Length: 529
Image 1 (cartoon, helix red, strand yellow):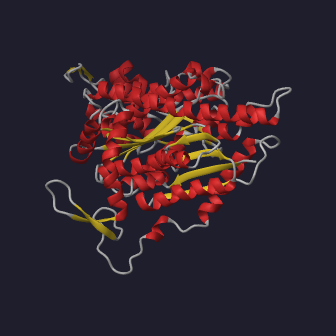
Image 2 (tube, rainbow, N blue to C red; image 1 turned 90 degrees about the vertical axis):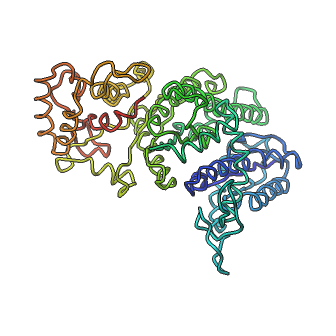
Image 3 (tube, helix red, strand yellow; image 1 turned 135 degrees about the vertical axis):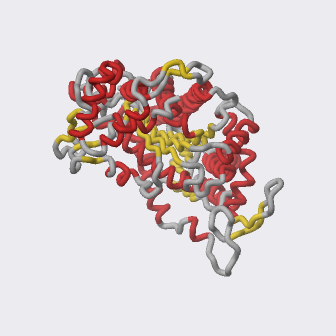
């Protein structure tokens, strides 16, 4: 007999982004990582387990010989979390007994994943650990009841909650680990934190997530069926090996993509040691990064391209997903003091929006990104933000996002004519073409070599015209065509058209609306560096 054990943290992003204090963000990231990786490894060294199936930041899945052993490991880790990571929600569960000579390990794994939400919902959340009675001072950063005082060099001591104190104590280890993800030292990460707190005018919060990776794990048994003559025990052994290798390979590819994006970030920003780049979450196919705002959109795009490239050639990924994997990203660009938790929520909504690409390419690895620059904080949710971009009583839409970043050749195999046309109209390259109309050509040192094809005053007038509706905006575009001719042609909805818009079926399948990508280019013209 054996049992499958699942230990997982929840609410990770909210825990990490609970405050705008970057050092606390780093410390929280470190505690999430340690809970799912270091503490699990410590626990299973003390209580040997049969086999580790997956182990990544915030999540571990492994086999034990009996339920008592599994419960002992869960107790060890959750007790440690209560002491060393107060405020982090850590939960574990143990499957029913399973005979691996007769029963499927895959089904036991699926069962334990179903059990975890039930166990988690039966327990009070972390917020119940920090009651206000008796009355206490308030934490200077989290708003929770104070549990002690913290003093930074050269500053006065401040009241801090136990949650904040744990994060601050872990920040040093976090600087070292996060610097290592970028191939740098702790000092470089510390410098990026200082830059983002003190010098950045805008901050980009980037969330990226692999497409259908969860479904691959759920359907893994179907991808590696039993062979003739293979016993159940042998199949379970082969399944566990492939599962462990695939899980590790996905994380390896994610880290490689972060490193590749870091190199592109340094080239674009002309900075050394990735100044202003902070990868707070890199676990499995899940990534959350914070960076200097003007470079966020390109950083997300570079990561997605590198992730596709890495997964397409890694043998342990290809063994499960022959064409590799795709991913989607959302980029929320906000002012440094905008609440990070809300910025992350917006980035997560933008990631979900980018995943529209899966509706068009359900059986192909594909990647897309969506972004928003939050000038007006009165509406921070994506739905009201996008609602404001509807004109002509909802029949015209002033954004063509998400942007597809996968190249056309990779998407082309098996795509319908309609899906291929959708990808072409929404492709990243179309945004770049439109931005090139709006921006001057610069030398490597930043000097302007030639002015923008469309003067800034004309671009401003065009922006205002868009909000007056499709007919008025197109009449304005006609005048620009008469004056600037081929130079402004890339602004057209489709090549050769005299309109800024093109017709497209609504995402909810309720008829057709007119879409333009010009406002997207106007929004990000200073951000594609």
